[in-house]
Length: 548
Ligand code: SGN
Ligand code: CA
Image (tube, rainbow, N blue to C red; front, side, top):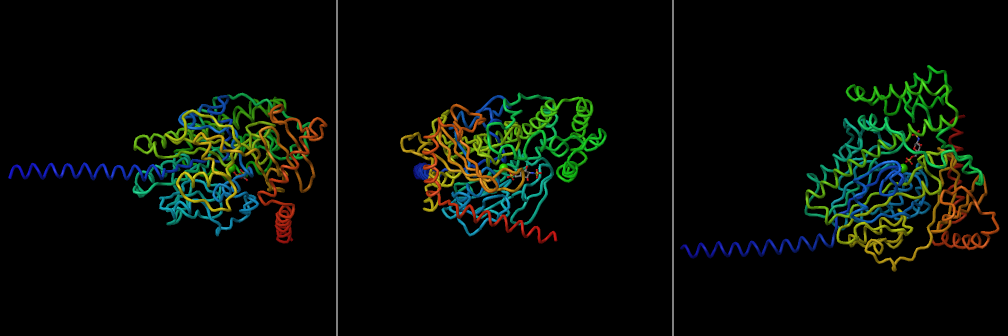
């Protein structure tokens, strides 16, 4: 009896060890073959505001962890530097002239395949939380909670499959709470996951949480060298854009000077400014939150009233720049804290090793360079975007990569990492060789860019361009016909258009040829340029008909 029972216990033990280890091996194999993907994207996060790129403005220890433990791309860029087009490119793996979402207004044709659909079909558990800004609900996700349109910073509303819900608190914290809850409780843990964790911050009008608002309003930041750019030696596009800190940044709406303070000084502020201020986040603030925001708003208003009347124009621009940076970087600081929470969760739950973590933005942003805020231009600060990727045991920790990768490449990269076949009409290239250190398998020498939203907000003219490691050749068209060439090595701040300089004649000829070839490769053409212009003309006619 005793023997039998000892035997059976032994047998059970052996069996359980065998089953356990078989199951463990199987799990290992499955997980090795199919990594989780955590795609973190913020909105308008300039690489200048990540300390892994530059420690001039802010310390972002948590985002930096991805560089320390993974790969930092120093030449990652977008195909069209604006929100919805960038998102459409990421989701479809196609340039915006092909996927049709050339600007923030154009509807997205939802019959197109987006990469989360392919993940879902391949057995991944998929979700999207935060800002999509697409005009459509996402496809291919088992669960979603997204902000409507641009969404709000304070007490934001979310769209879900079950209807709308409004959550009290600060958007960056809330999007993270929801993401962690999905990772912890909602998802099917038998499956690998694809999580799209998408921040609204640091999008205009840059409202930090009350704590960061207070802390950052005490700080001052170094000015970029080109804050007082006069746009000499460039074409009309830079001169005519409406995105200067001095003239186009709104006093109340953007720099958060209470409208009463402006009226008190009898200053001619753009009427949109107070109107937008009173309509945007300010009325959403509840009493408890206002107790924290109000003292800071008052101190900004007092400082403004005391100093503004005697300031020179130059000092006024500097003052607005400081206010802009205080709020923008306050927003970033919350993003960084929250990225830290998510990375901790991965660590604490044994998920870090088999999860590819990507941190990026939908484009870059001007933090006072050329006197600007906003984006849209081919010039570096908005053309480039942060990109940091961690994938333990695959990517060598602490590596920097200088290749020209684009948001166009993301879909194919993620699909390859997950072992899912990418549709043959996607236009990017998987950057897997770079991640795995097989640099010799990568031979891209130039990327293509095309911006369309003109006439439109900030009035940045339409342009398409070729960018190589050495040069940038751009054609501004529609109501101008101007070419710009920048020598990226000699003139990294892009202050001198050398298109007409005879010293660059050969470069110009060569780049014209290469640009024409890229236009063919990516199926862009003068006819297509015209078709998209016609759509704008039609929109304008419709608006006028409505007015009359
Ligand atoms: C809004 C902002 C613009 C910004 C666009 C696009 N104006 O229109 O400054 O360029 O969004 O941003 S605001 O008065 O509404 O703040 S994007 O990230 O969605 O492309
Ligand atoms: Ca954006």
